[in-house]
Structures are given as C-alpha cells and as structure tokens.
Amino acid sequence: MFVNPQTSIHSSFLIALFFLAIVLSAMTAPILQKVFGYPAGEQIYSLFWHICHQYPTRSFWILDHPFALCSRCTGGYMGIFLTAFIFSYNIHLNNEKLGKIVKQRFFFGLLLLLIGVLDGLCQALGFYDSGNLVRFFSGSIGGAGVFFLFYPGKMNRNKFLMERSGR
Image (cartoon, rainbow, N blue to C red):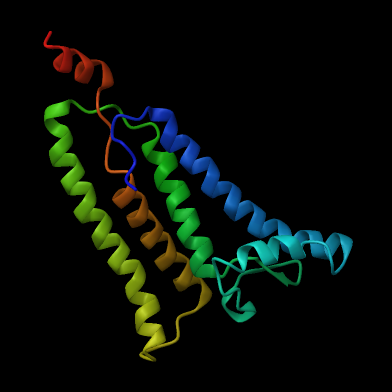
C-alpha cells in the first residue's frame, strides 16, 4: 500500500492533482445545481456519497447548495493535495538518509493523523461541537498525516542503481 520511495518526483505531483480534482469536483456539484437546476450535479453527489456522509449542516455551501463533501473531508483531501504538492518539489535524498527520513515522516504522519482524528472523535463523544472551519483544519492536518504515512520519502535513483550494481 505504501508508495515505493524510488518513484519519481512526478508521482507526488500526480497524487496532488488527483486530490485537487476530488475537491474541485465536490465544489462543482453545487455550481451545476445552481446553474442548471436540480438534477444537474446529482451524479457527483451520489459518487461522493460512498466516501462522505455529506450532512448539509457540516458542509461548506456555495451558491446556496452544499459541497458534495463535508468540511472535514474537504479539508482532508485539501491537506493531501497541499502536502503532496509541496513535497513534489522536494529534492531526492541520499540512500543513507532515506531510512531516517522515512521513520521521521512515518511518526510525523501518525502524529498529524492523530490530531486530525481527535477533533472528530471528541465531537462524536459529545465533548464539544466544532464548526465547519475547525473541521476543515482538522481534516487538513489529518490529510497531511495520511500523505506522510503513505508516501514516506524519495531516494536518489541514480545513486541507488550505482550502489546496487556495485560501482
């Protein structure tokens, strides 16, 4: 399930574009409904229904219609997008440093994901009721953690191939 650390720098950029497309399509559903009327955009809502509860009170609204994702899910996908985009321009690491960086990113990812989940858990347990902006930011933090967990690092492929061949 983890992305291979030897993948090119472009793979995290493609990951970023994929998650940006998710957020933009969730924002497109209410726009389609406002412009073209009720049936328009329902396919997008039904597609995202499988990954999000879509409660209107817990969603951002645009043009008097809710996003196809709740604010926490929107934040989560935006967090993955921003983190993947920022780290798509990261330089390749030397192979000696890769193990240390992978461990650091793993624990940092766990910490961020825990922070992101904590808001939802505290709200579900009834400790408080967070607003959509807090949900968005906790989702963003959790999304960044998910990226660090599943995309641990990059390595210098040329140096790796030279070390592997014994040069």
